[in-house]
Amino acid sequence: MPTLPPPVRSMQRQIPQMLKGFSRPSGWEITVLVLALLVALPVLSVAANLFVPSGGVWSHLAATVLPSYIANSLWLMAGVGFGVGVGGVGTAWLVTMCRFPGSRSLEWVLLLPMAMPAYVVAYTYTGLLDFAGPVQGGLRALFGWSSARDYWFPEIRSLGGAILVMTAVLYPYVYILARSAFLEQSVCVMEASRTLGCRPWRAFLKVALPLARPSIAAGIALALMETLNDFGTVHYFAVDTFATGIYRTWLGMGQPAVAAQLGALLMVFVLVLILVERRSRGAAKGHHTTNRYRSLPRLPLTGFKAAAALVFCLAPVMLGFALPAAMLTAWAMGSSTVTSDFPALARNSLLLAAAAGAAAVSIAVLLAYAQRLHPTKLIKGAVRLASLGYAIPGSVIAVGTLVPLTALDKSISTLAEQWFGVSPGLLLTGSVAALVYAYLVRFLAVSTNTVEASLHKVTPSMEAAARTLGLGSLATLRRVHIPMIRGSLLSAALLVFVDVMKELPATLIIRPFNFDTLATRTFTLASDERLADAAMPALAIVLVGLLPVVLLSRAITKSRPGDST
Image 1 (cartoon, rainbow, N blue to C red):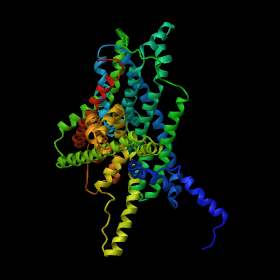
Image 2 (cartoon, rainbow, N blue to C red):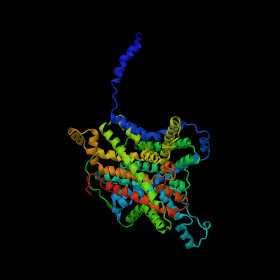
Image 3 (cartoon, helix red, strand yellow):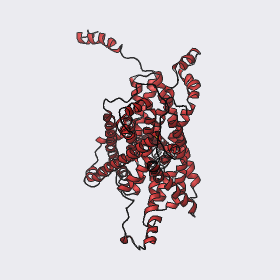
Image 4 (cartoon, rainbow, N blue to C red):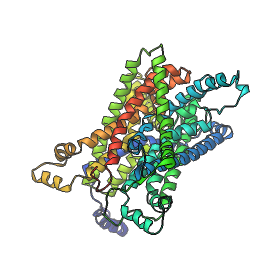
């Protein structure tokens, strides 16, 4: 046997020493990593398509419609960001720190627009404000006008109309987080500012607002992510954005690679938005150095100030919920035609939402519990990787889902033809399973965050007691933790359920042929200008969306430390 050279013998001695620092991955780490990669696969596939040749299609888009996609998306983000910031912060401060007629009821009433999908509100305002609608019709009858040439009226189907609609629907994202931040602030801080001569308005600007800035920035970022995700509103209002461009490129031009590249560019928008939000905080700290909490003193408002506060708080509720709900109800009651397949639409929507909610909660429990048992960098990184989907618009998730599934279907078909001489066709692409998978990728972060927060409240002594009784980790999860966090699991499932019921772009792109949901049928009927017929499925979506509003209102009201109310 030949003698090995000295360098090789030295390497043989060093390899065992090097491997001592590497531990064998546990079963939990392998499970979490596999789940995270499966969930993140659509996002990774979109990013990978950046390097796929697109021929002349990309240069054609860059020379024609891409500038309008970028400009409209930026203007939309700027307008909605400003609107939700002013509306959400202003209403949160008034109902939290001031007392005026109706302020207590407004605490939960201001959440109602969350139940309204933006595209449903867009349909109702179009029916209300277009030329044939009751507003312009009433003006013509009142002033004797005969045609549109006799007067000027703002066009609702425009960029400004889209900004108005999305602001009215998305401001609760900022309201929720801003109000929670104001509720958590210590009275001592506000009293200290008053002793230094700050009047209420100045104390709000100089003390309360800077302390709540991280929460406000996070709320605005969430609202802007939903703005970039929106497809129904901008499509109906003929405002070209990245969401409409991805849809047209995929279904209209038949260019999945280019659609994925547009999606990757939209992902860059989202990532920049997240980075700007985090960098805006800088090194500033917003925590309190006191545990002295008591009921917040409410500033009483009377006269003109009380009336102005009431109008300011009622305006977004009227625009985002009351007026659209009234229009939908009137259309539904006055419509002579009832969709014959409404039961099938409701069944499809409910089954999809239930399946996605159950899958999201099940996987979220595994991820959160694994992170609790083994808080290693690998597991923490995998959990964050699995949560990327919520920051990515639904149209991008849809494209990212179909690209790998189409490749997998082609591979299966090729192997089946080679081995059995039969082509099974497309098994996964355009299936219900693919649709549920896309929902899971999109909304897993919603359930994961809820489950993590709930598990964090369970004392570790519970696990120690279960282990002394001979229970393993899975048995402890099943018999100890899940019964203790059952309420949070139901809340997480409900949040995912409602989000799936409202999701439109992913459903439009991935759904099987001749498979409709309440959201897609509402979109189809409204696109055909059959707004009265679209009222019934739209109302069903709104009624389902009211469920989490009640949960959110109760949770926010009880969130103040030391408050027994």
